[in-house]
Image 1 (cartoon, helix red, strand yellow):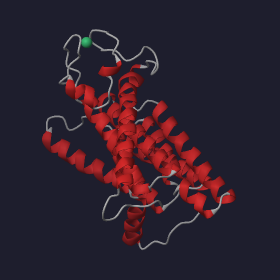
Image 2 (tube, rainbow, N blue to C red; image 1 turned 90 degrees about the horizontal axis):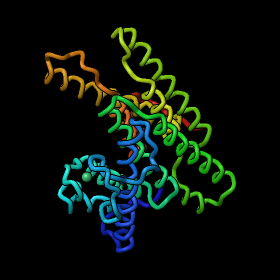
Image 3 (cartoon, rainbow, N blue to C red; image 1 turned 60 degrees about the vertical axis):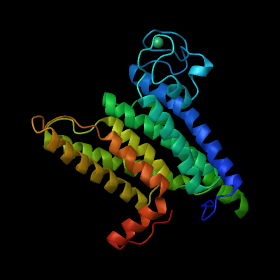
Image 4 (cartoon, protein in one colour; image 1 turned 135 degrees about the vertical axis):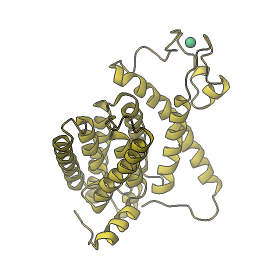
Length: 290
Ligand SMILES: [Zn+2]
């Protein structure tokens, strides 16, 4: 676990927060491209960023994360078509995700991996809300980050001195990550199977199963993984009841589950110890070590 600032914030920490915010905002720009293009099966590299209404290729001063959209008052510079404030919120959320990750996990490899994973979860959240779809690239990227982090963690514990292990930071070991991935996929597959049998229609997409497998590689086989399922189901149930109460005429309206999985993952990735302690205290459990 890296240093968690307490009390006064030093100038170095302020500089760190600013850097994390700026880098996170840049990742937010990329997340916006992914949210728009991946569900449309478009390349995320070509063509370069352009206004989706008038087609004008955007210049560097149109692409400054967070600031450009504020300066342009949410409209295209060239055709004045509204861009939509989702772009702004995605960039801000990604910037805050980076700050939160480094605040929670210190300046470590683990922080960077968690921060990039949070960006992936933000993409999954928005594509599932808008398209009821989690593009395969998202769980693939999140899973790759999880396995890579676990590999680095396992190797560092084998070959590095304790001081260098601190730079890698907390991360599930490779065995734990693979087990977390398998258990995540298994549990979601079972929920999907039973849900489909009970509701007599597809209760959950395969994208949710893939996303949970990918998230499992980060959380590892631990009580935090139990917490992850509990939080996702709890948020899903609360939002489901609210939607049912608000839309009485359409009780069978399809509700994507990916956003709840993403939110639960954010909580578990930022506060793994807290979630572990809560789950252990609820069930009187002992820690799992792999
Ligand atoms: Zn335009």
